[in-house]
Length: 81
Image 1 (cartoon, rainbow, N blue to C red):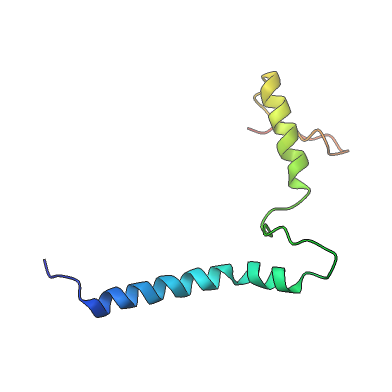
Image 2: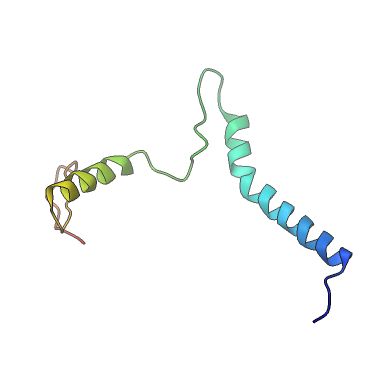
């Protein structure tokens, strides 16, 4: 097995740093673009309306329900696993 050279370690470190910076760019942009008087929550990937669905599934799981329905949706929904 050949040893890893210093240049290869530098490449891996630079590539890792580049990927880390690129994946943080949406968060940095969101923080910078937040209007004064408002707060950026650093969590752009979740939808606010999903929380009601998660809470309804948690409440149903506590009750022992296996097939979940959306309790916060005004139209009837079919149970899903």
